[in-house]
Image 1: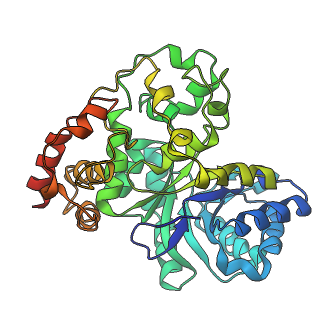
Image 2: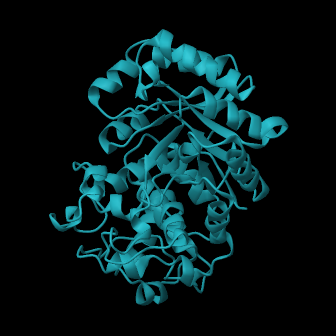
Length: 382
């Protein structure tokens, strides 16, 4: 397994994690099999938003003495009042459900307390301008959570939470289909329609989504990815907007090459699905390469770095994609852009070593002017 830093939290997480949604209403034996397989392959992060008593107890039982081996994202506001899944902004209800989550898991802490499903301006006010956010802060002071995060599906609300430095972890939808969906469209509604992607023109990755990822990296906010497979739609040629199926390896690689992404969470409910996901770790570069399928879409990706590393090897040893992410994140205007500067300083080879040979530009399938990127890096970081 490969591990990455979860932003500035001090936590290391596996690059592939468990989205536990599909374990809801499954028998204990199936949950135990899936959790054991994840731990056996070194997965150490799980998102657990489901509010039901039984699934929480079964996951806690499956983890057992290995609880400390799993980083758990638990959600504040996910409830099932009257046995119906819902979200609540009632502080007392949120407290009760979150305290119950710890009891059902037989643990005294949750690693990341996620403010659940903050998508609208009204929901933002209900979470951050009431007692719910102070409750999350209190949980952190008391050691009941290690970090504060939030889940969102809307770039403008997610950007606000990141820009105002309210959260340390953002759970967000990241996959090539959503990224080429205009950010003001409901990506879930679009992907559910047979002709949804045929009804708009795109110029590649929507710049508003791309800017969100860069802002997260600049501010040291980690992204944990939901909908890595696009709710399974990307794995089928019939439902994929690109007219061809992507593989799990391509979907995971796309997510992991976006700025700020720490872990791609995948909905898994059986050992064989876990094994299919972790094949990413042994996949060849060509098996992970998503560029051919993505580029076949009708959009124009010219000049957009897709972080695919087709430009490598660099004669000077520069990791061009990583350096480009630093430059793009550093140029966001975020105060200090400390995350980008720190990431740049950790590179083994920086822009000062670029010889301007043009090797990278000749190989780039998207026509990125890498020499301009190197010049920008020298100006930004010295």
